[in-house]
Amino acid sequence: MKYLIVIIAFLLAIFNYKVSAKDGEGTNMIQTIYDFKVKTIDGKEISLSDYKNKVLLIVNVASFCGNTPQYKGLEELYKKYHDKGLEILGFPCNQFGQQEPGTNKEIIEFCSTNYNVTFPLFDKIEVNGENTHPLYKYLKSAKPEFQNEDIKWNFAKFLIDKNGNVIDKFKPKFQPETIDPEIAKLLN
Image 1: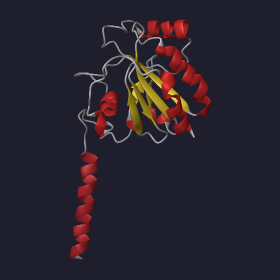
Image 2: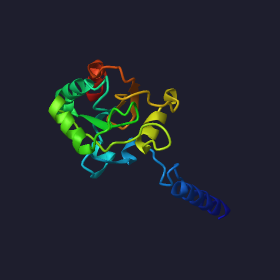
Image 3: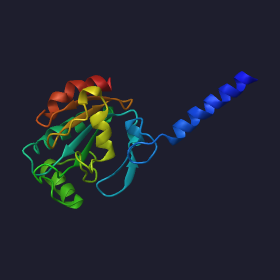
Image 4: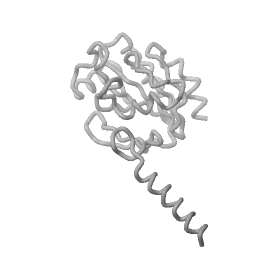
């Protein structure tokens, strides 16, 4: 009987710890990328769990950046692999040289007019500093080698496998087409 009471007390302690575990935002502890909710560029809140079993390439994007032509390469990857399970998620960011000053409507118009972008775009966010979006806090700390390092510029890329594991981070100048072999490998 004594052991049964100890076991019950232990299980209750574990249960209470899991229930009370909090992240820095005061919400339940984030364990995977699928625990995040984000707003689409047209203002709808969605869960990244909608992308389970997909390979994801998450990119902070901008319309007036030296790297903006990468939209073309991103769209080519999307067209090539979308039917096989790739999703590219573009998060506009105005933190680097004010290179994404437009409204969400202006961003959509720019991307569709200039680059025929069809991959999902999301609400403008911050990727560094005090107002870093929780998704980017998670991405920047997902692997020890990332060391919570700040994003250096627009078009930094995070590659996530079908199980939601962050596989790699690519610097802004790294061209989308050079990621093709890694995406193909993750899709197979």
